[in-house]
Length: 255
Ligand code: NI
Image (tube, rainbow, N blue to C red; front, side, top):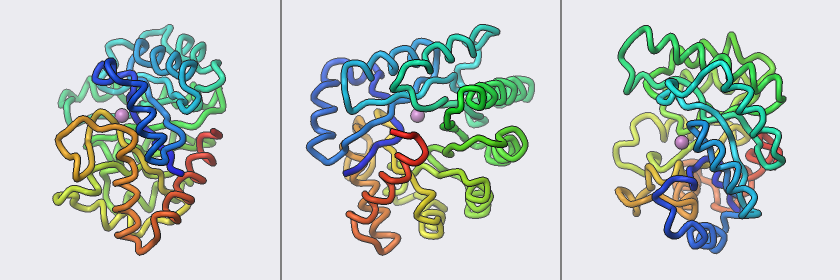
């Protein structure tokens, strides 16, 4: 059994065949799926989806590329959604310096990230963090502002050194389709060195489909390809990878 710990089934790419996508995931052995919001609207949508599918859980939050939608009522609105029983996390939240080059706006991203970390602490929920080209500042914020919180650096793309700091904080890394790419850079080295109790598998569907589906729409069934690659790199069986990544997901998200 596998758990896809990060995807976006509320996305309009799934409007026509969402039920079939969930069915295909189940047939592939993917028993549970966690969808993450990035705006108020998508956070409400992923929460609503949990009511229609027993396999689905949700995280709610404002993504760093969506900070214009964050205001003084945002944390209260997210808290209201988080009161629903199958909302298991705050996310995805964090920093994205790939698309944001303006230093003032990067500071606003940091403030909003920290405000949502505080919300997670108040609600006693784990956190799913987006970090794109912002590894240094993300780590600094986790070290100084995330005390008492647990979470995952989703779609991990940092260095081996940073992964060690993440593990010291007792946080997880999320591994996605890019692990299967030819240009996977540092990621194979990171996953080979990672403790098995710190690895989660994800698709981030509809984005980042793994080989052999690269370039197509991604979906939760394909998380098995990520697990296969992990098994190959770490010299483990697929069954072992399924067992420990699922145990880790249950441990972090209480699903
Ligand atoms: Ni995502």
